[in-house]
Length: 321
Image (cartoon, rainbow, N blue to C red):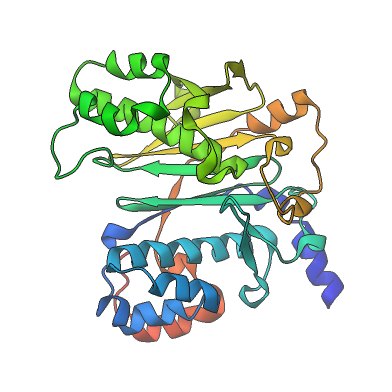
């Protein structure tokens, strides 16, 4: 019955904080984007999403884009109890994705359900939250240099220096050796990206306006190894929290903050947020809630139950099995 299904959906609030990662370097579908496996998975997403995937020129980009869309749909199924044919994904003007369907039946424990995705290098990652705005960014090694040459801070400053404050640059420089500076640079860059993606700013936000103080975390937060605070235009934003986790040689940052900071020009995403009036203490409590680290999943983990049989008929051996 419909009422029973709605009741089940409303009980899913505790499942709304996901941390999922997919290692695309381990997935080599036969025939690449022309092969049966890739085409089958492409048929599992919205047609407009499939068309967006096809527009990419290189297979690696098509691969990451498809996995990103599968992750988003699996997230909506897991967190909201929606069937895949019910899931409608839209984007704000600032390109923040959100689930536009099933708003009236959101779980009671997830009044502001939202999520974010990122892909770079080997990984595609997704983070979701029940109450806070959430943004995620993955920074791959070598993103700041070409040809695999060693990290060179002076060269990096020519391309990225305008995005960092003087204190941030000093902190990166003080790590000394190039490898450590590379890690410090990517942690800082990932924080900036996760922050603006959580808010939904898009490319119009001047990244130099946000300054991050990043510190090593205690063992109690593992697998997160660093935390961060952010100031914008010199003012500390106490309602925001940042957790950083290494994934192989990549860095992933999850940003969480108050829904009052959302940037949503058309207001469609904001209408899906039903609990926007927490006081500052409430937002700090929600942003500081403990979270599990990222779980690395395989292709089958991204599919709904009714698509698994068709997938297994095509793929003889699961590389993630």
